[in-house]
Length: 231
Image (cartoon, rainbow, N blue to C red; front, side, top):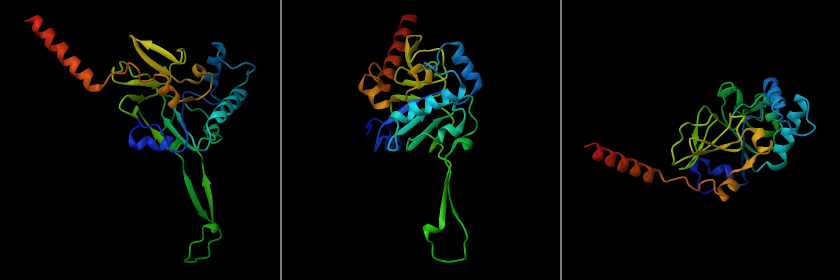
């Protein structure tokens, strides 16, 4: 379990691992043409359907039924989401995505050939599961005191947070804006393989991220000193 997550999100890692990816753009023509032009397609992949199959396979290699998969937006064809093995799926909506309801998982229990019986027998029901996302968020999401998920990079991002984002296809997995480090999870930036959140934390994701109270106090001191000099 990832202990630093807020309690409401600890179930993500209760039985398995948490993986992150962004901008798969499954079967999206514009995205495929961009990746082709930028030379960012995997080796021997030259059609939009082949890329979709490749991405599904790469995700399913590491993300299984006890794991949580977080997608930071720009899903593409939702039929591909239905084929992912992750037992729990989370989506932060991107600028190319539709409304929340379109991506939410829906499970319906349908009774066939009902005869008006009072007793309920679960064998009388068939289950319809669209196998989409268990949680869908329309905007940025803080999942711990220091970790902020978003689709677009949050600029500027406070020094007491690390921003895990997507959207910026031209950027590498780790990039800086005004000396602030960001983590980019666009599929092509991470070789189309989901990244383990626990491994990121283990290898220093939060190193250098300051405590919010430390940042607040330092800011107040700096303002006080600046005011004194002006006087």
